[in-house]
Image 1 (tube, rainbow, N blue to C red):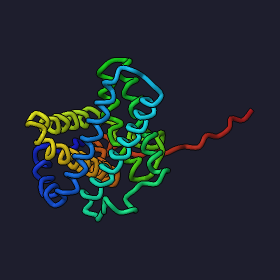
Image 2: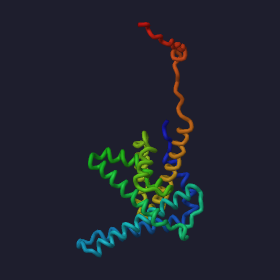
Image 3: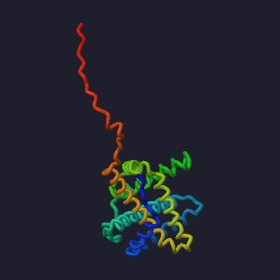
Image 4: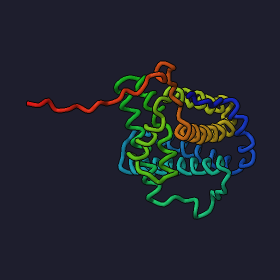
Length: 237
């Protein structure tokens, strides 16, 4: 069965969710851009020192923490669940954050391995593993378990999912071309639509499991009579 998910229609569907959660999404978007701006500025430093290496490591961890909060927030928005970004409960435990980091790193290694082979395998792997980080956050799973579950889940739909996420990524980039201000809209809406696709693909797979495709039996096969089995007798010596 074909997985139907129209990006344009889902962007319109995501617009009311964006408006309902405008301020928290705006804060998260500004925080994300600020971290990226600081990190990019530090990368331009030519001298490699211990302090610089430690700072870059801290920036990487902070970036992963913010991305975790992004996905946790959007999952709750799409599911229409309450999520107070500024509450203590919103902060992930070290175990949850570590599982997310492991999954993100393993996902990156898998895609890079695809690039080593050729570009096309990398795109295929990205399509098969695109839900791994969402699974890790939802189920608090480690990298290998989340990667395996995403790989099994997306079997037969890698290219379809990759191209949908690719065009959705282009939509998110369009905001930067509109004097960067547009990204305050396209960036969070892109996240919302991506989680929508994850949720709808989950439902799609569950429907396929509960309603398997019936196997057609030809009329010729139906007319075949059961052949009786005659027990063999031993020949006397």
